[in-house]
Amino acid sequence: MANKVYPDAKSALEGFTFDGMTVMSGGFGLCGIPENLIIALRDTGVKAITVISNNAGVDGWGLGLLLETKQIKKMVSSYVGENKEFARQYLSGELELEFNPQGTLAERCRAGGAGIAGFYTKTGVGTLVAEGKETKTFNGETFVLETGLVADLSIVKAWKGDKEGNLIFRKTARNFNPMMATAGKKCVAEVEILVETGDLNPDAIHTPGIYVDRIVQGAFEKRIEQRTITKRENA
Amino acid sequence: MPWSRDQLAQRAAKELRDGFYVNLGIGIPTLVANYIPEGMEVTLQSENGMLGMGPFPYDEDVDADLINAGKQTITALKKTSYFSSADSFAMIRGGHIDLSILGAMEVNDRGDLANWMVPGKMVKGMGGAMDLVAGVKRVVVVMEHTSKDGASKLLKKCTLPLTGVNVVDLVITDLGVFEIDKHGSQPMKLIELADGVSLEEITGKTEASFVNALR
Image (cartoon, rainbow over all chains, first blue to last red; front, side, top):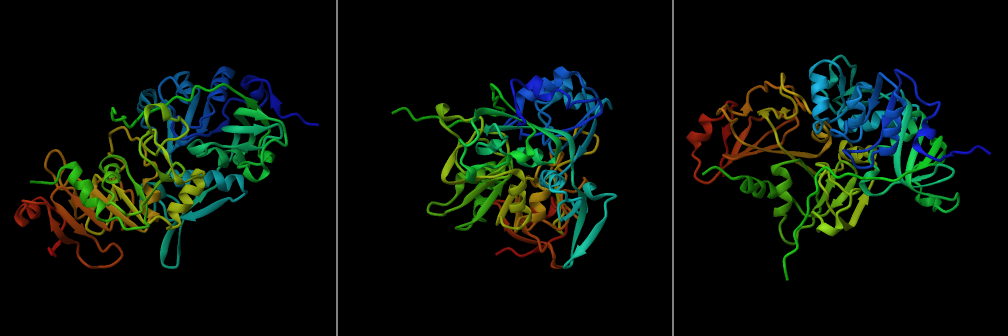
């Protein structure tokens, strides 16, 4: 029987990486990012990667690590405001950047994974985002054609997974991970808790194992970008 | 006296209705959550994948897996649900969210909005703003009436790259409130003045044309 379980992030990427590849990386900000697989991807030394990810990490963490080592050639993102090294490389022309509206990016990943070549959306009509793209009128309203996205590899992070690759996400750490899992030719998932097949409630599975080629259990730092709290009134 | 940031948020809160699903942008719009009227049920959506957003957590309850679209740690409520980014924007684009309140750099009298990019400056990206203004039923902008150098931000034609065309329904500035007939041909209407602001002052500081419809 095929084994999907790998002992660590490094071995889980073996044979799946090459120069010039396209990688989808799940997460929103630093929430729900595949932190171990990003480090392992850095350590492969693979170059000229196109990374599809909503954000670009921060300096020194998440995808910021791959920027430091200049392994990223191009980013496809919706918001990259938290990263100085990103700004530096972009302004100096070392890094290409394609902005997608966040919902368009999410839907492009969903469509790519579902075998949908393109879809029409209202988002971005009449803006820079729609320039050079086909538009079409439906019921008197203008829509712009956006294409589905696929990647050579997607790396995602879930809370729980089983040995079949079935995944359950936790709270807002789900974000882009489920769609990206479907849109990679290969998908590697890292989880906090790896259980025996049969231990997850089948009704509660967010990503069925068919999308996941390899799974690895990791330890997580789970860094927080903006720690905002409510102060307790002293009794 | 022009309205303060908190007064702007208070005025924007008057646009809330019982049972509304609402998305609040970053900055002054976030403050609107502090002024939801007593007894009114409003459900806040966070576009990173959550419906039913609660307040900031106590220190010991901070959870890295629970953040809002501004990447701030938050809490859940009894009614909370979580979903993927694709589901979140299906909700937004599909017209299921009642109200979006967001900031702006420029708005014109036809409801065009610019709030994501200044050419020549490092651009951070549009995030979910283009999807929100294209899909949410009603779009309310909260902004300063003029830029730091005194130029009107309510224009005949936006000069900055657009976030959306014919998308804004209402503009609340520190000087007053304007209603926009975004899909029709009615002129923009001035419907309220901030306390102590005169018609002359607001007219002098507004490049866009509007009609006086003060109530």
